[in-house]
Length: 229
Image (cartoon, rainbow, N blue to C red; front, side, top):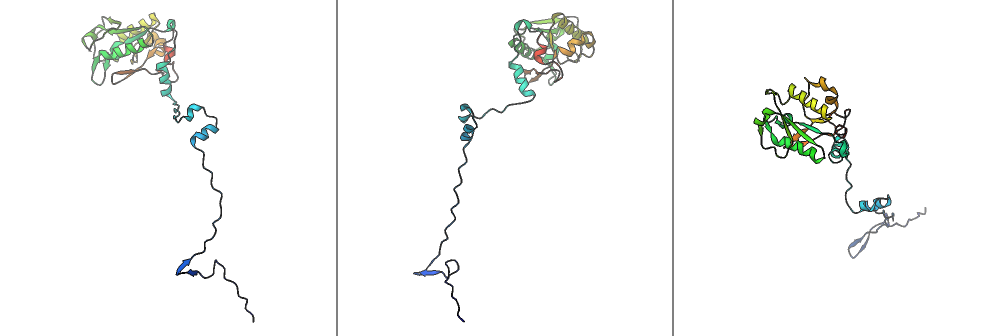
């Protein structure tokens, strides 16, 4: 019976020797297409029609949302006509009181005064006369009016009915806004419209005053509305 011999292939045939060294046969690797380089950020921006200012490598500012954005606008964009800006009455007793140290600081009144003066508003500070004996520090270059015949009680900085009535009546007569953190619980019925629409809250941080853009929250009048006649 004839046996057909098959010629050994390179794949499964014996390894050849050349001078004691093994010569391994190499298979031709498949020629895959070279992957294309991904475009850089600059090229992608250029293809999408970005402006040249964004191609310079500068990071685009991230837009901010929520109350922070509106607060920044409120501080810089109170574009109220000069003749339409309300007089601002500062509750000197309430603003000056530092509840952490339990003292009255004149600098707090000055910070509030300068904040509204810088926005072009007329400002008047109203204080009970007895506060002159309690204020720590000087009160330079401020328009201050001291109200007499107000009894001095320990809780007057937060609840002082006679002084609150004076503030509200003056705001009514002058069409003014009031800067205060009082709740006006004992006197709000006399001038309900003012208490609900023209009282501006505040907060202090390291003796710097911050005025919110929405003193009454989102549903209430905003700062530029309160300060506009």
